[in-house]
Image (cartoon, rainbow, N blue to C red; front, side, top):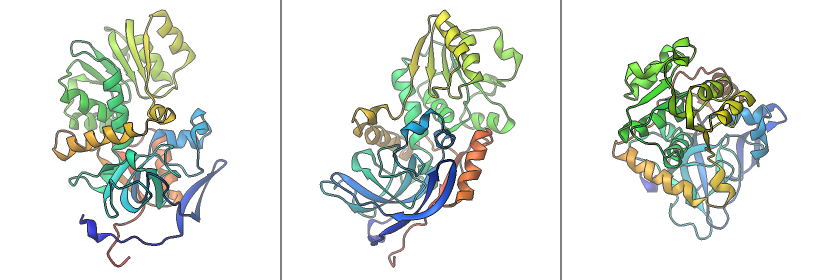
Length: 342
């Protein structure tokens, strides 16, 4: 959209959805102000991720909350720059994985973030599509970068039809990987993987006994955890590599992995932020944005649940917890694009 289409409103308060113990409430709170190297962004859309409901349910991720407002990624429009933040001017459409690097979570009308974590929104993506990209693709890219994956080796992927799984499949296929087996638990999930150009013959139902016999894999990439971590451990070959993005593997899975002398790689999106390397996120998101701008990668299919409300969040969490997203990225529309009169 044209840069001059956005004016900088003077909003002192914003609407946000806060987590109070286990209850979600819609409340008006103070709008944050950008500091050194930061920008204020009006959020247009936000994506939902399993870590959202895991935080809400009090799992280990709850310790990572620095704000009572949930939400880890967004697309939006820059409204105001803090000192020494000049890369994105007011009116710039941007997107980012905010994690705990922002002033608050993304179930809100505004957020302040370090400018270095932002990337310009590709013109060929809608705000809703862009909101569903950062967490999934940055996670998948970290798997690619750290997994030491080899073209001739075999790869087994659980939860492949989720947003991270689809992003990973697209990256793998773009790099020429073909020796892949991926799990899907429904017709919709199977179709989502086919839409990613994964051959149907390589897609298996994780509940099938056939998946548990016959072959072992060099790499098992676990995007689900729990019982799926045990399936991965069972299917992994001796000295194979188990790549974990959930930290939800069971004690039995860990025992099997130890017995097989497995190499274990933990994928943590927030690890770089804890070491102060916030520029990592903007650097790699910019690279992904260029791949999407040129059509070499595509955004995940999105399902817009509704606008900013407790009901929207409740529905999104319910769908994620029950594995009913049907291969789509769940998105909440926070605000509409501003008009010059605002």
